[in-house]
Amino acid sequence: MSSFTSTDVPPSQSSTDAPMTHKQKIEALVGLLLGMFVAFLSSTIVSNALPTIITELHGTQDQYTWVVTATLLASTATTPIWGKFSDLVSKKLLVQLSITLFTIGSILAGMSQSVGMLIGFRAVQGLGLGGLQALVIIVIAAMFSPRERGRYQGPIAAVMSVATVAGPLIGGLIVDTSWLGWRWTFFVGVPLAVIALIVVQRTLNLPIVKKDVSIDYVGATLIAAGVSTLLIWVTLAGKNFEWASAMSFFLVGLGVVLLAAALWVESKVKEPIIPLRLFRDRTTTLATLASIAVGVAMFGGAVFLGQYFQIARGYSPTAAGLLTLPMVIGSMLSAGLSGAMITKFGRWKGFLIAGAVAMSAGFFLLSTIDHATPMFWVGLFLFVLGAGMGMVMQNLVLAVQNTVAPSDLGTASSTVSFFRSLGGAAGVSVLGAVLSTHVADLTAKGLSAIGVDLSASGGSSAGLSNLNELPEAIQDVVRAAYGDATARVFLIAGILALLSLIAIAFIREKALRTESGDEQLLAKIAVPGEIDSDTVDAELALLTEGDDELQRRK
Image 1 (cartoon, one colour):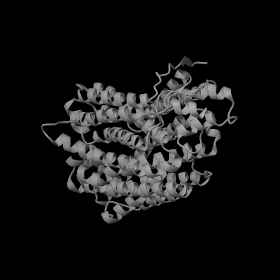
Image 2 (cartoon, helix red, strand yellow):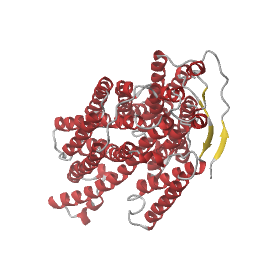
Image 3 (cartoon, rainbow, N blue to C red):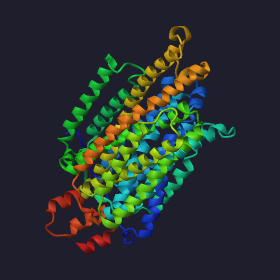
């Protein structure tokens, strides 16, 4: 089939090779989380800087969108590819490559002289971001057992949450500081990325599997192209062209054909990027479905919070970021506490169900807000939502990692993350279209209620693009429309969260393993008759690091 086969050359062996100590694992975890923090920070730090960037580089509104979309496309489309590679070659090398790609992309983006250059270099950033998103979770799974992994979910959730909230705040501060300027929104993460690279190089010492590597390049290309085509469609539809238009039908059709071809290739090649056999497992299939719903609800719903606080409630960008803190705190607390309890008792499904219930409740509570809801209640609803998200996101990945074979650990982990990101990307566009339509209806009704003649006053074009130029009375109508319309977005997100709850309810709980991914590989080789020798030779062969321990067990 269309895959290229080569044989790895094993690294030179040394008698000093040995399994990682607990101290080394913690040090490596710090480096990995630092890399994750920088990557997630880069996704949000540019948001408050974009108006200045587009103005100074003489860009257009379409290019404004693509500065964000380029990173989203590259990271989402390549996540499963990074995950598959982690099952085939050195995880440490892949982590270093992803950090390096991200760092190079950041430096070049900061040096951009045109918006076109910036979009291209943001795509390079996205390649590194996709690797970090997938590999950090995979490497942690290789170092720590599922039972032990729960205690580290708090720090992971904290890093993701703090980076998401801190990004816009730091970006706004940098842009407002005259001696820095917008280019430093890209440069600021470079020193931290270099530190993460050094820490990973010095501390991460994972076993490397020597095996015949068959890389499905055609499948990888078709998956990336198909996903990118559909993401382009959901990103641009409703803005650059109508949802029901010739361009929409063309992009959807092309995306479906590419993904259908990818499925056919994946069913034929020796080492598919996303093995279809994974979905024969009930837990993996249901967790993937739940992740899609969580992604749509989480990204699609939460992205409109900043708009609600700034447009409907009149808060500054900095204040809007701070007002999301209840959600961040709820996520951090619930992820940390649920992780500790999972490690202690070895049970996880109850926390997944509780998290899905809380997430659904949070969205439904937020569906009751309007432009005048007291901020105390909005903050309380956000805390409930965050608490639910904290228990669901990482525990879905944990459930899958606990089920699949160690040789599929990377692929399965990245598949769940991939579908969550895909759902989120689609959710942002679809829910944005719902919000835009509802805002237009409420604005028209509000203007009619105060006796404004739409055709005579120009109110028919009232919106964000000219909000500050409108008379104060019309401004108030538009702001109220945004405040009231946001509730519908949260209502849809709540319904999707209920779908994730249903999927989670049917997942069969399995006792958490007490061995890490690497220890499971060693155990399979060490137990005679557990798997046939041909499989061992073909798939596991030789762990070149920690070789003395391996030979002793043999």
